[in-house]
Length: 101
Image (cartoon, rainbow, N blue to C red; front, side, top):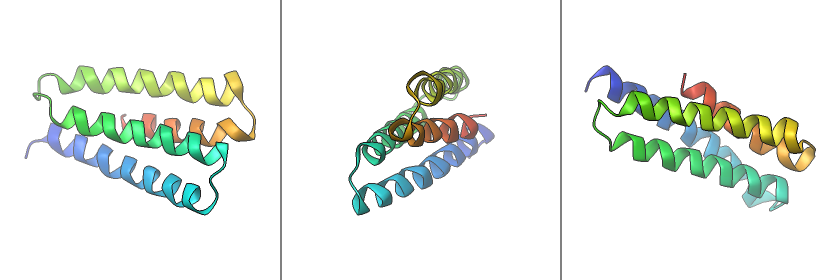
């Protein structure tokens, strides 16, 4: 396993933890806030899993694309829409963005 694979595996592990937390909160209380966070974290995890299937030469550019995507949606949920319902999803995108660094 090379460093690219290890990095992607690290991203997947971190995003799995974010998704598991969102799933836990949504299972306990299925509110709009928790559903948005679960959707965001699930999408980010699935995208990371898809990146794992790419050729190593494609991975750096795809990670940068996902970083930019997560950065955009973090801002949109937190600053664009804001409010209690949206900021948990914004946090999930922030965690994904930070994992992609």
